[in-house]
Length: 293
Image (cartoon, rainbow, N blue to C red; front, side):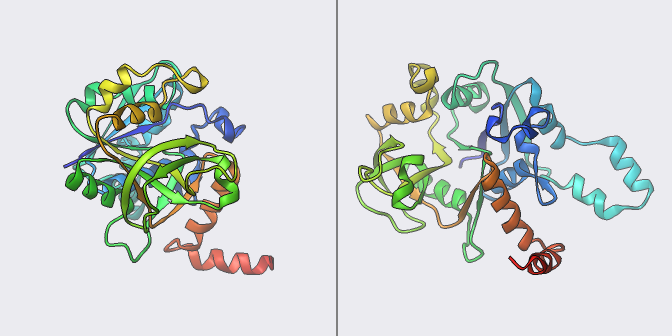
């Protein structure tokens, strides 16, 4: 069973300036909690027990958030604010460990994943890009990440999460080439990934979301992956090398994504999560109605 997940959080967040000048973009709040918490909880809900943050020196706030805060906990306990105490002590279950490694140089997503090699060892693992929030449908028995993990256990084929996008937007994404169009919640054999194809030339309308289930072998491939686009070590290049010997599948998600790496996607996430918030949702909907938009 897959129990480890890598979350690359070392990026500078230039798409989110000026806020990300002093605050890690992953710590910008979506309603009442940082975006990174939603991603971690997605992983935990899928059965992950070790979260590996690939970070750098300016991102200490992320590590601190998942650590205990003795002084604050003591103050809340003394003031009998037990509801708030529960909020900050139950961010992750006791059986889940959050650890971190440093990415000393910004050498790409593939390099970020490779930085966690010693912690991964011989285990298969998940990769979750924290810019993207994935909400599962309420009708889903398991979230999409968990379904990818189950598929991997059955087929031993690496899984790449994808979603359908409008045909006129394919030039903004990495688009997968698949043997057939899968239904939501299903995986199909993937032939490759085409980065930002011109409209009308894309092999499908399925874009890569930022969720991967990968075999431990990918680490060895990353070690031998030459620098590619942007003079960086690209994860997609290592996946292409993996495809020479093993099957790789595209899993079509059922849920909904929000790209919190850009400002408009972030605002969309805030809107959707606020509307469904258990205590703020009703008042937020009323506030929207008052605006008359």
